[in-house]
Image 1: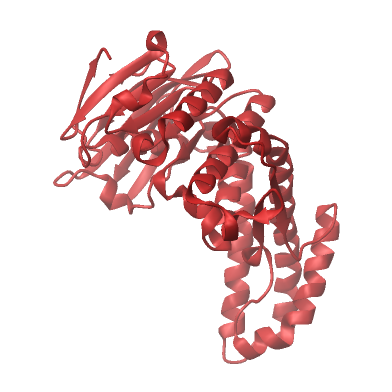
Image 2 (image 1 turned 90 degrees about the vertical axis):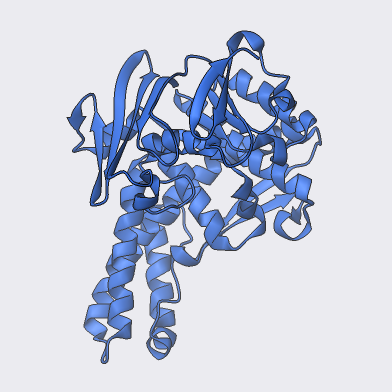
Length: 366
């Protein structure tokens, strides 16, 4: 997967840009608060239709403007297509090859991205919700249909929560909702387990590559939706819902389901969340992201890789190891840094350096 050209108008603080991105490594450099991460945000918006840092849609539009647009020309499996996202205060429109998208599955089939940013250490060190979000994002990147499954489960969960909060919850209604919730929840848990099974074999290998330490990374999914098939998982969830019904009625809230699950990350048998050093946390998160890339390559296409603020997050040794791994994977990489010399291990013949100053971009030699 290769982004050949990026065009943006009215996006965050960026001046109108038309950037030739025809290199394996594109380095965006300059002082802080100049707009480097906003360029990554434009690419992330194209690839996911989401903001990179959870900003509201209105915050993606340049101050004083009423709309914004980001477009990219992406080559995947030998076919080049034009992707565009238009933003206004009232909504967002995805456009593929000049036509408004009616099938998001077709849109996401040709453009995907994985991002490593400073906040990603939270995947290892924070609460289970962060790890669930990471795993759902990985599953979506691998198979965009996962998004629909998660949305269906959330709708069922909202309906059950509303019934539990009502003045007089109806047992028959709750029974019907539990059946729907168990079915949808089993699909969510099953897809998550499948994704983790794809990533697990590569995580230790990538950790060793980045850290140069031979530690075993173990990933395990902790869920009440136990079983080997969606049907078995649904039966387990339904039994759990029945068991928890008295407590749910008493507390007026749902107390079981995939929204309570967790991903356990261990290094050599010890909880990474409890015992890993800061450097080990960074290496572990990078290993997880690179495992996604390896799994994607095995499926047939490697997503774009976005690397934010590399000079503050990784030392030169880890950076060199990361560059080597990404080059071996054939990934196109977009990296931001305040110090381009930190990326001296990049191949000069296939690297484009772009300085960013108050939202304006300028391509130049190293």
